[in-house]
Image 1: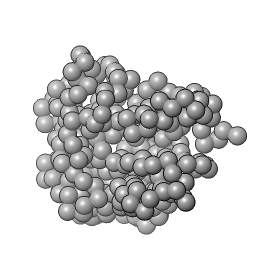
Image 2: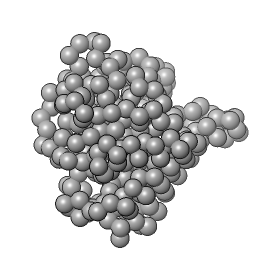
Image 3: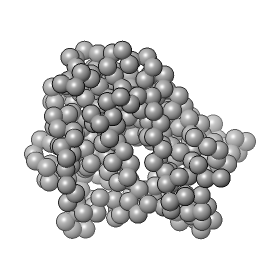
Amino acid sequence: MKMSRNRLQYKVCIITGASSGIGRSIALAFAREGAALVVCGDIRRTPAGAPERDHDAEIYRNDSDQFMPTDELICRDYGLGKAIFISTNTTIAEQVQKLVDTAVEVGGRLDVMVNNAGIFGSLANVHEGSDEDFDRVMAVNIKGVYLGMKHAIRAFLKQEPDQQGQKGRIINLASTVALREARAGAAYNASKAAVVSLTKTTAASYGEDKIRCNAICPGFINTNMIKHMFDMSIAADYMAQTTVLGIATDGAGEIGKAAVFLASDESAWVTGATLAVDGGFAVHL
């Protein structure tokens, strides 16, 4: 098991989309760093799709652990009461409010809000895509982030600053396609660019309230959400050729490390930033 530096000790954290993929890795990383409470919000409790064997492999004692709900895995390895699951559809305001209210009720406050839940949608270009797919992608990827920030900020504003003088930290998951051109997936690309813009606006608006807001822009991470692309030889070759440092063996784990940094006091003077964790894809010529 990886060593902890307890960088998130005493912190109450919410991660949406925490049942699998990047969200699961962030939740596990937060628990490993001593978070007082990890609140896992998702539409389902068990991991979606096939096991993502390369993610946080050291925490799995046997194959069945890969199917274990994230909150159960955290409680088993880091202590009872260290995590809870709240069924949450992030496109529904009442459910997001319940997620935040429950975190505050159980944990006493809210320190970190990670808006990770997202979908990919189709690879269609603008003239080929369906209106229904566009609306669905926007609802999850941008409205869901907006609602998560809205209700987290309301909780932050009601509470006293922590020992470091901060009321709250928001981490939004965008994408490296928000930083450079991409020829396919118009709806997804547009939604992630909107996340970056909303992140900057929020950072500028709430800095005086001691609330920080940053975005992580992952590159090509081999999770179930884009597994179909890794299974396509043409797409897989493109991803490998345009990622300067090569595809990471534990890409979701790399995002978890970045999230820990942005959630911790090590990033106390960082807000409005877009942190690309993409192996250099955004700078590939």
